[in-house]
Length: 137
Image (cartoon, rainbow, N blue to C red; front, side):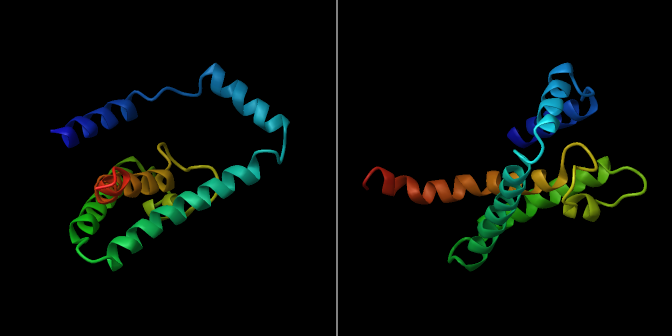
């Protein structure tokens, strides 16, 4: 039920996504006025986010008894790639949208969506493993 509700919400927000607001335009002009200040930070954060997602997938592959986690990650990635395939415009591919390092080719950004889905689908599994150690049991 939660999956269906999430998919419906994503579909609704994708269809009704407005253009850039005045606040977004002001923020973009502020960042453009200070060249180089935030560029390195966002590039580093992007690389670290992708590295964390890859580390979670690798950890689920090599850890014992984590087959269900790997299955959940693969299903989540397939859903995101399927959604991206529906959103991709003419003249570009999902692979190109997922691997480009510049501004995103489509909304939502495929790289961000792939990393976020791996991290989100992994958190219940890894969180449950460490929940007992946090309470001392």
